[in-house]
Length: 100
Image 1 (tube, rainbow, N blue to C red):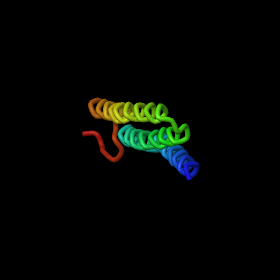
Image 2 (tube, rainbow, N blue to C red):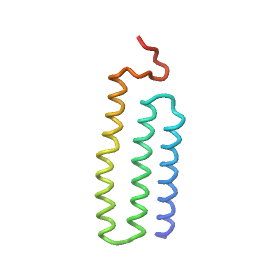
Image 3 (cartoon, one colour):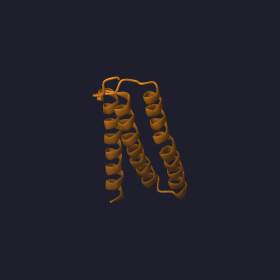
Image 4 (tube, one colour):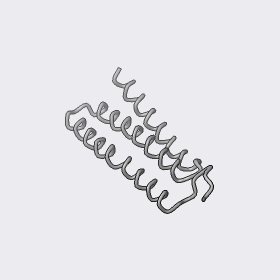
């Protein structure tokens, strides 16, 4: 049963990280790209770290995965916000919004 959980978390994490990469490549502007990257990469990394903690099965691995996940939950959305803020302040073109 735990092997199926590990496999499912690995596949879901890889799919979400693949969607983040697809969003970076295909979305039209920096705000959409930052949104896709922060949401999908954070959830994908959470799935992969969860799978790693279950696969190793030790308390130390669970603690390290939790610590890494907490740091990623703090830094990934913050960096996405800062990128979007910089794009807004520099008036970088947004999809569907003509410049004034």
